Amino acid sequence: MNETSRVAIIGSGSWATAIAKMILCNASHINWFVRNAETIKFMKKHGHNPNYLSSVVFDTTHITFSNDLKKVIAESDTIIFAVPSTYLDEMLKANEVDLKGKFVVSAIKGIIPNVNLTICEYFNQVHQVPFASLGVITGPCHAEEVALERLSYLTIASKSATLANEVSLLLKSHFVRTIISEDVYGVEYAAVLKNIIAISAGICHGLGYGDNFQAVLVSNAMQEIKRFLSKTHHVESKRKTLSSAYLGDLLVTCYSQFSRNRTFGSMIGKGYTVQSAQMELNMVAEGYNAVKCICDINLKYRVNMPITQAVFRILYEKASPVTEIKHLTTKLK
Image (cartoon, rainbow, N blue to C red):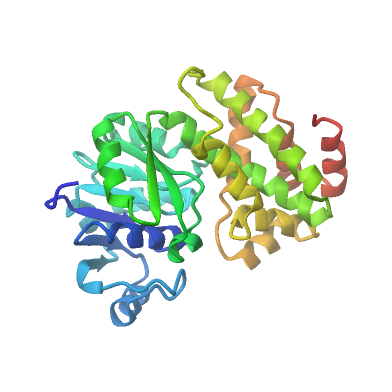
């Protein structure tokens, strides 16, 4: 990305903070939208996020902080969104933002509730951003490991090879390697679905199921993801579902100690209510809202998705985790 390009990060959670760290390895300056004015004040004074990844220290002379979303977007060319999907629509409508002429990049592994759109579908249909100006950052990469500079791989997907390559150059470093993909639809939905599967893995862990069963669960989950992607957007000849953006992201989200969806599911398996688990987690588990959206979408396609259906029944219909998972075990192979 050329030196005159202006890059903005929207959000102040752990993933937004990790992205800021990655980009500042390559860019001389970023504009950073942080909603809370007190957080901005703290970050300017102390050089780190008080709430997330506090070990990451920034040279704030290279950052322009603002809680004025409209201003940050107007003064930037490439906008990277890293906020929970449940808040995105309300936030953009409240601020009446104009994304015309911008490169819009989603670092959100979620889906817009009620309208059941992936993030790129949402930006295209609601904000009229052409797909040639849209990109996705995905892959098996937890913010906590970026903070520790442990080697990670990211996939940048876009219909525009130019945009994908420019974002790749922004993110790559000695601890981040990047992969380019054209499969915007596939990587977005895979990222949504793996969060749902991670909740199921957490529920099973909370119930006391061991590694042997988890391996069966995850292998069946990969087949479930492939069935959904194939039925809803068939490009099997190009889509490599065994690569890191699909299988890799599924594995790390199901097994990692840093996975909030797995942690959320584990709480449910141990007897927490949905509300109490959400409160204790104190972060958004994207899979909770996603499972309802996917089940709504699947009313049209009728893909066989027993794991997704089990999670939906446990979270939304108050089915017993013990009973529901026991029933699920009879459907896996």
